[in-house]
Structures are given as C-alpha cells and as structure tokens.
Length: 257
Length: 306
Image 1 (cartoon, rainbow over the protein chains, first blue to last red):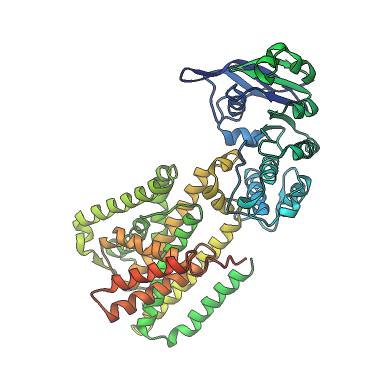
Image 2 (cartoon, helix red, strand yellow; image 1 turned 90 degrees about the vertical axis):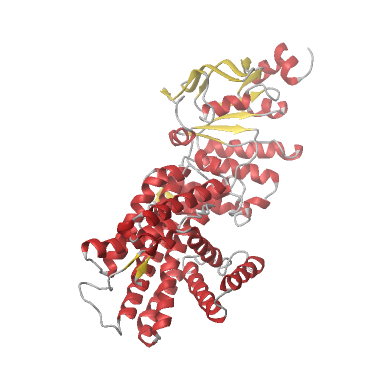
C-alpha cells in the first residue's frame, strides 16, 4: 500500500512534560486508523503537529512525499489535510447552511473563483456544482439537512459534531483527522454517528485518523490502531492485536492482563 | 440580492430629481450625511468582522487634507478628483498600517487605531504649512473644470456625493456576497476555524481595513469640499466617536443603513444644537442611550436585505 502520511521521529516537549518522544508512523492511503491512549498520552499533540498548529521540536512530517513540517495550518489545509475538533469549532452566529457556505467560499477563493469580478454561481472544485448545491449535498450526506436553517449555536451536541466534520469535508481532504468524533455523544448514538461519518468520509475518498476512547468503537471501525502512552506509540497493529497487547491493556484500556 | 440595488437606485433618483427643490441648509445636511455615511459604511465592514475602529477619523482627515492639498498646492478643486484623491491617499496609508493592525483584535485593534489617528492630529497641529490648529480653507468646488453658479454649487456637490456614495454602496454590497466578504462573521465567531479551512483571517482583515479607509477618505474629501474648510479636529478621537455612533445606529444588516443613520444623526445633531446650543452633547448622549436600550441591533439590524 502507498504511504500518504509519514511521521518521522517527532519530539515535542512542554516544559518538563514530553508530549511526543520519537513518534514515527506511516499511514497508508485509504486506511482508517484509530488513535487510542489516556488523556495526556499525546494523541491530540500528534494531530496538532500534523495540522501545523504545533511545530515539533524535532522530526519531520511528510504528506504525499512532501515535507509539510514548517507549514502553517491554512497551507496544510490547502494541500489536503483537514481536521475536526474535540470541541466543535463552528460559526455560532450563522445558520448551519451559512456555516457550509462560508467554508465553500474559502474553497472557491483558494481556487481563484467567486471573487469580486466573477459572474453567476461558480462551480466548487471537487463538487462540479455551485456552492449552494454542494452545501446541500454535504448536509444530506451527514444527516444535517433538517437542521439547515438552524443557528449553529443552538444545535444538539451530536449535530454540532457532525457539522464540525462536514465543515472539514468541504475542501475534499485526502487525509481527515477526527479528534474524538463521538465524545459528548450519547452511548446509543455513537455507532450510528461513527457509521454515518465514515460512510460520508469514505464516499469522498479520504484517509481517516480518529482519536477515540471507546474501545468498542475502535475495534469496530478502525483497520489499524496506534496506541499512545506517555508521548510514545506503544503499539501499532490491527485492533484485535493492539487491544490484546499487555502494555496497551495495562496503560490504555485499563484492565490488567 | 435585488432589493438593495433597487433601494439605492431609488435614493439616487430622489436626491437627483428632488434635490433642486431642497433649501440650501437641507442640501448641506444631506451632503454631509453622505460623507459620514461613507465612513460608517467602512466601519460596518470592520464591525461585521467584530472589529471596532476608534480611529476612522484618521482616514477621514487624510482624505480631507488630500483634497485640501490638491487645491492649496496644485490649484485643483474638481469635486470628483478630490474625492478620488482622498480615497487613494487613505487607502495607500491604510495598506501600510494594515500590516500592523491586521494582527490585532478586540480592544487592541480599537486603541491602536485610536492612537494612530491621534498621531495624525498631533502632526497637523504642529504643521504651519497646513495651517496648524486653524487648518485652511478649501478652494470653491468645480466639476469637470466648470465652476457652478452660487445657486447651484450646493446641488452639484450633493448630486456628486449621491452618485459616488450610491456607487460605493453598490460595490460594498457586491463585496459582501464574495467569499472574502462572507468571511467577516466567520472571523468574528471563530478565527481558529477560519485558518483550519485554509483561509487567512489576517489577509481578510487587511483587505477590509483598506476598503474601510478608502471609503473614509472619500467621505473626508467630500466633507472638506462641502464645508469649505478643514482643520486637525477632523482627526480628533471625538470625530471617530461620531462615526462609531452612526455605524451602531445603522447596524450591520445592509449597506443602506449607514447612510440612513448618518442622516438621522445629522438631524438629531442639528436639532439638538438649535434647541440648546450649550447642551447638545447631552441630547445626543440620551439618543445613543435610548438606541442601545431599545434597538441594540441598530435601526436596520433586523433587516438583512438580500
């Protein structure tokens, strides 16, 4: 399988705390990778370094063979790596539809379309449709159509999560990083939401890395698991193998072997 | 998208056709309302992105002095040339200062813009060549090289003001519909998300800042040629305060609001001054208080005309 994202020897310290110590991983195209570990193990730091929010003290990150370590988040986004957030980052004063329109506007602007002098409704790259139609299509794919005109501030938790992910999908990323997509979602809804997200994301053809604390969700949806502990990756294997690893059981899952 | 152009067209028609029947003092008030409305229109652009500039008088004053300097040093007093020059000078200065200001948000943006306008005030007060605190008089207005008769000057200036203001409002209206214009409320709500969508919030703010300055510069030049005199008080912070008052009075719903608010402000100001010359600020203050309590979104805040 072709490697789309490669991390080599990433190190990141916050004072005396080591959030990443020699983290290396090669992510294959079209795979679904689960990131597990206790709070503070380094999962979100790993995501933050890939998306450029944090710069590693040492090490490098390559995306499709290109070194993206020094780039700013917006440049990394433009290359095709997007993320969702543990706490949904929405535009609270706008409707769900307008949230999507802002995002699609950015895609248009980055493609040099939809500017002051453009006429009519330019086609959004990757959708072959004007922004209004592309927004509607994505809202339907993520089960958000019924909330179209609701204000983003007043949405239920699970819907906010879905909108956050739908916003990340607007630029049709080739790698999508989901930070705890099911946190704050009731136990009964978790599987449904995760299924919808992965169906939606896979239909767009993106490689997925997701952070998750629920091991049932991980073993059901991930093809591969990276287990983090104390800034290191202590296991990198298929879910059944990784979750059976004694170190993972001890430090991550919390059940002693 | 159709309603705003129609309303603007109607306003232009009313001013152009009905103008000659207005008394001279009313023409003055309407023209000044266009000048202040242009500044408030720029402030509205910034307000939509959550930025309050306490120093828009900087560009208002720069525009006025650019127009004045044209007459004083080059003998040019064509209204249209003055307004274009005012806008161009303001935009050029804002382009440079924007590299600094676009990095700041909230109170820091506000106070930095205030400080910059007070620097201009300080420079003008000390500058003998530009009349120091007294300022200087502007040459009588001309249009396309012709000098209108005394009965028609006010109308000609008002008509030019209407054409330019309506044109600027139409351009801003169109800008609001572009991806860059749509980004304003997004920057106000969540700048982190803006960056993670692949857009530069700083670039967007910089563009809006330059546009706002250009509008204020045009407004300043228009005010200069209308009043016939300019002085450093045009850069003083209380002038910026007036513009914020007007921008808040209008709200950020549509591009017509700043002009309506500027006209209302002029009416309140003139009436208050007429009734009680020594306490007009108090009347204005009470009006602002009532406004904030009863119309927190401005006169037109509730009508986001499409």
